[in-house]
Amino acid sequence: MASYLVSYRIAQAGEAHTVAENFIKPCVKDIIECMFDEKAAKVIDTIPLSNDTISRRIGDLAENVKSTLISRIKSTKFSLQMDESTDVAGLAILMVIVRYPYLDSFHEDLLICKPLPTTTTGTEIFKLLDEFFAENSILWDNCVDVCTDGANAMTGKMCGAIAKIKEKAKGCSSSHCKLHRHVLAMKKCHL
Image 1 (cartoon, rainbow, N blue to C red):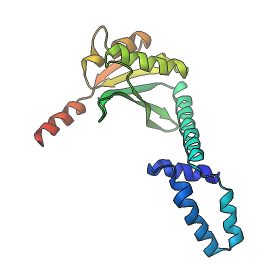
Image 2 (tube, rainbow, N blue to C red; image 1 turned 135 degrees about the vertical axis):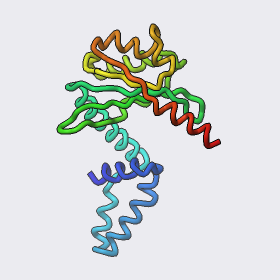
Image 3 (tube, rainbow, N blue to C red; image 1 turned 90 degrees about the vertical axis):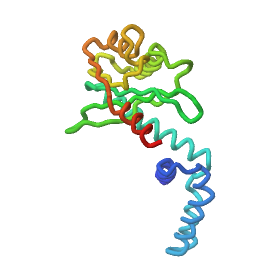
Image 4 (cartoon, rainbow, N blue to C red; image 1 turned 60 degrees about the vertical axis):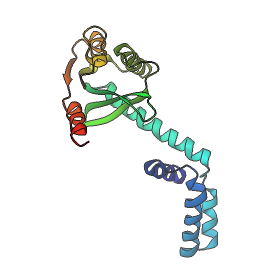
């Protein structure tokens, strides 16, 4: 449990996985030895905090978050907000936010953040999303709305991602986010 707690903190801080074994463990040992005794400090050596262990623990934690999110949206109606963006290396990335009711409020979570394999066409965007839904047994019929930035790859009448989604999710509506263009306009104003 201690190893998972340290791994969680390292993931939150975005630190290198080696920080646990090289920095955190020696510090904790020093604290325990000062506050208690050398015998108590030796117990710290039994906590697995190697680079590989931290990496596996973070993977386990991420998988748990993903499975929790997927189990929540499988049983309820949800909406998607999609954006295709380019990272600093020029790689096209699809980001999908899901909004869904849970307990007494609405929640928003990052559902997908994956690179697009070839091009940023509506067909490729839909294919990536459809494969994710199929792998995780998410029903398209639960998707009630899709919001995008208005790019042709998203909104094209025949080959746009929204058109393809509406073929699968019959009752799905679509909306357009004006904030994306507002941000782009503001960037030009501040140059």
